[in-house]
Image 1: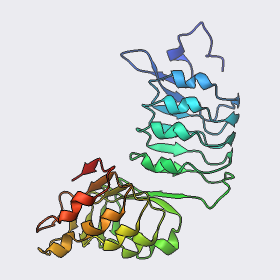
Image 2 (image 1 turned 90 degrees about the vertical axis):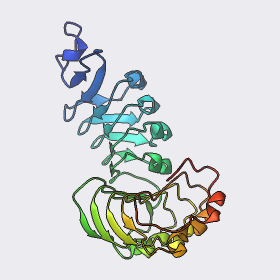
Image 3 (image 1 turned 120 degrees about the vertical axis):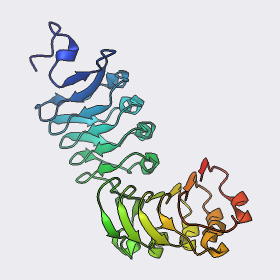
Image 4 (image 1 turned 30 degrees about the vertical axis):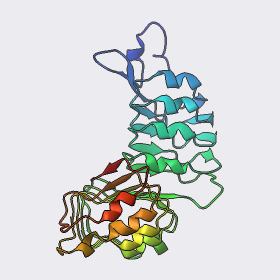
Length: 269
């Protein structure tokens, strides 16, 4: 690209956006620029980057670990290239990441299960790669205008489900009991909806569960201990770090069993 030369300030280069106050690169948008070669590891030095779009080029090689150093990164699009190797495990450090698009590459190996810890991630595409196992599945439709009831048999339709999230919508009806049969689940987050009824006690079977969030719904309301009985069974979820049911219709005494909840629990509301 002709504009990428030392006669121009880098903030004036094609595809480069800089912050107004500090002059640091915040966005790198080189989508469909016929780029070839590899991404240099030094990309990790651009610590103010919030967006990278290198989609639809002819880039090759591995995805550099340096991307995992971009702690402010919100949008990463490397789709439609020829990237190979594994997805960097340190992408989990990019806690602000909302969009991750790696589809149509030559990536191999295991999908990083820890991506489920990226609580702000609401768009993930990994199709047409070469992952050598049944694909893990991230279903996230957070913050849309969706309504209606959740599917009754999640286990049959989404057997490899890792993340099931649909916060900030208008879903109604009960929580599907079958959700507890999706034994690989790490994250369930349907906060800020209109769900009713009880929380299935069978959630206690989800031994890999890390995050369970149904705050700001219409759950409970029967006025008895039974409405909070599910807490007794969640003591089996020893990996649970986030548990929130605030702003619902639960009543009655909180069971003593909460003292036996996960020792790694960081957030309970």
